[in-house]
Image (tube, rainbow, N blue to C red; front, side):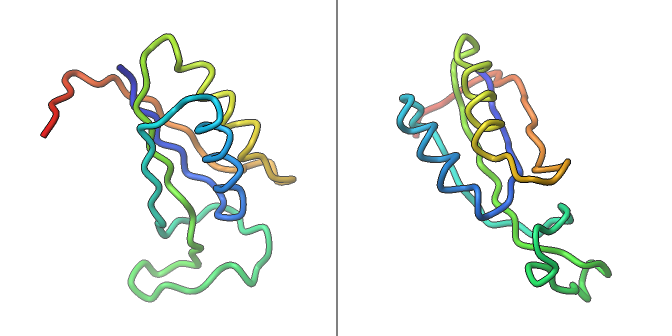
Length: 102
């Protein structure tokens, strides 16, 4: 199993989630996070006294999938998270050692 963490602009999150769900992915988590991606609009940023930098609210999409679905999931995220900027976000992939149901 693989875990994908994608940090993307908020305004692209709905399209990313919709495309993943439409393609059968279901183990998806979405979390608002503070990050330092390049803002699409400077109004989207705020100064964080805690971090000492300008930040914006990004979305972290987490997804667990089978190894044979990895390329499809990454492609869907990349295609739907794209903005007109050179950096539309980041995607990280990790190996899952064990999954335990609770």
